[in-house]
Length: 305
Image 1 (cartoon, one colour):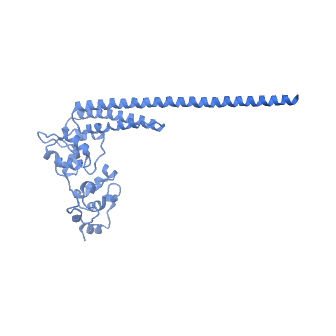
Image 2 (cartoon, rainbow, N blue to C red):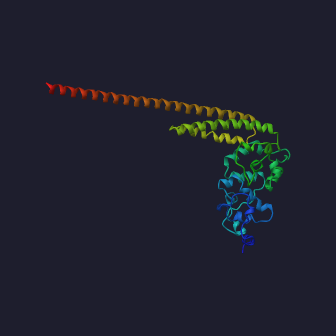
């Protein structure tokens, strides 16, 4: 009997107390079932951490990142050659390539950022790196000589959703002053607010029966350049790009307002035509009634003679 089955037989089933999140989904397969009953945090904690991560929420499970045969209860067979099994990535550069298999654009922006630049000496690890159970995160900064990688800010198995919330003293202050990071965060949030405001304007216009499909497509194209800035450290580039995004968002908003005014004008013309048609019908009905009565009166006059 394979070792994982023996262990599961001893405990009867996976102890619910070992799981800190929702029940393991079917997509997690035997990976979660086996790792949860392992002794010690090195093998069991990644599964519990994953239940709190954004990947689990999106339906991304163990084998989607690590490969292997999740349907096999035998750990050796699950990781045999040909299953595409990948264990924990090594140093930061390997880790970036590991995550970049799905996050291609993010990988490209990280590679061109200051976070990927070699450091003259080992940086003081951030609070996340100090406290995480992920051994790759704990070693990557000092050994790789890079400033910061994916796990440094996003976490590994308990990966956090990408947002400006990740730009915070806990993640940033361990390597450099937070006021500088906060200033860059402010520029990014202003550009984000501009996009969201215009998107809401388009949503309201669409709800009223308008179109603005071209404007919506142009607005969505601004998301890529904005998201690239999350990994950047060039203050001048961030200021210029966010300014351009705000200006372009304002131009798109102006186009939507023009469409709104045109829609209002067309609606007014439509109501004018409706009113004219109603008035014409009323006048026609009035004249028909008058003519009918006159005809009737003339007929009675002839009969009385």
